[in-house]
Image (cartoon, rainbow, N blue to C red; front, side):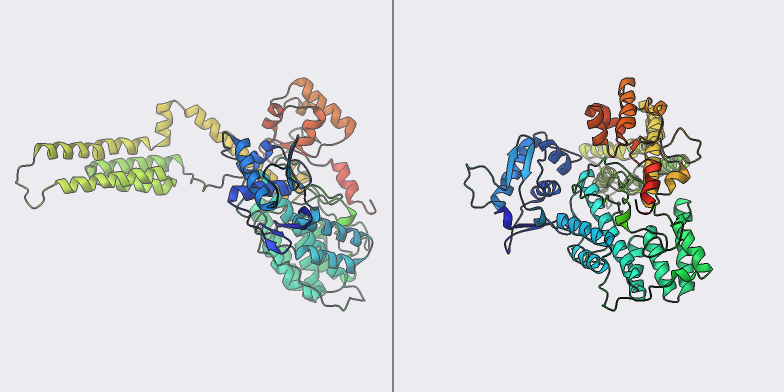
Length: 576
């Protein structure tokens, strides 16, 4: 049956047996299948499935839960299999669960292979065939991959596929420009620039298409707009290739003109029938077809398109070599942040002023407005617990009002009702005031003796945010690696990257300070790097140096795996 099974993950997850769509079952069962599809043809350990499907709160009996979902998948993927016979499509091996299906039956694998073939055609100079291959690949997209699945593994795989789609779109635009269809591209390129606002290659292509269409002023305006975006958001300038194109447009360089013999066949739209993808793009390595799902700790590689030293070196003659001629960069997306809404931060004086105002309001209203103060705190801090407490205080005030005999103020109040009223008044008045005072985080930290710990946590959080910002810069603007010296604590610099370390570039003295490693392990990393070359991921580092998980876990958020600068320069060289 595996030969007729088809799976779609480039959009809503779906599966077919022949022409019949299969009901894949509940969400967690679908997530287990998605993990297996990411490693189709390879065994996936049970622990990795648990980590991917339940990243934050794994069940205590994780293997049993996975086994239950696998049994459900076997029922829908192999409905004719006898209960006691081993599975043919989904089986258990010594290394984990193995999904045996034709790789071309998975749309994501088919997409990658088709893009790979297109690059080969491009490298061979068969532009028309490359365009056809790219069109077929992009038509597979039905939306954002892995919708509804969260966690580092799904996020990394999603961003990798999104990046591969973006590179395919860029390559298609490059080929279309080379064939002289610049006027037809402008509208699609504007849409792509809106979808991927910081991808310089798309900006480069848009400027070139506008210039070739006789719209020089708009091309220069597009450059100014992009430069303002980079300076305001990241404090950096456009890359050298874009600056060079800007200078050539200003002097009306005649070599920027379109090819003399454009292809007359109508151009297909650049964008595939996919919803706009909001996930940040991650460049992927095209030298060989890798597995779909990198580890969440897959290494960062930085690369940037550089302008050629002489005109005519590349087909478009504007500074960007085709992807087939150099290894596209692999970038890990910024660390996955907590999906819950971030609590707003406020200066200390605001917290103290709110505490004072809330306490005064509670005391002077004799507890009648305690509920309002607590609900205000709930909105401010986005805390459902405080919201429940505020509703509780409101309920108490309602009961107090009900106990008062407003129509007969002089009537004698029964003893039980009087005691109940006084008790509730104490709760809303005195205890309410104490509650508001204790909502001051500074005061609570002083009472619990956690002032130092709180400061340490803030410092750690600040460094984590700086690391995320540095990774984001590398991810969107690879030239920042050299400009800001990210991951190089051994070099003088002014940019704070939160303590990131480029394991392929720093000297051995820096490696000796890695947390969780012995001096012998650090020495082993340096020697192995010298003998066998740079590392590409945390998994490769651990495998080559035989590091246990307890040693590598503290390093996941600190290490970068960028290619050495010499290799990056060689990759940009023509004919390499």
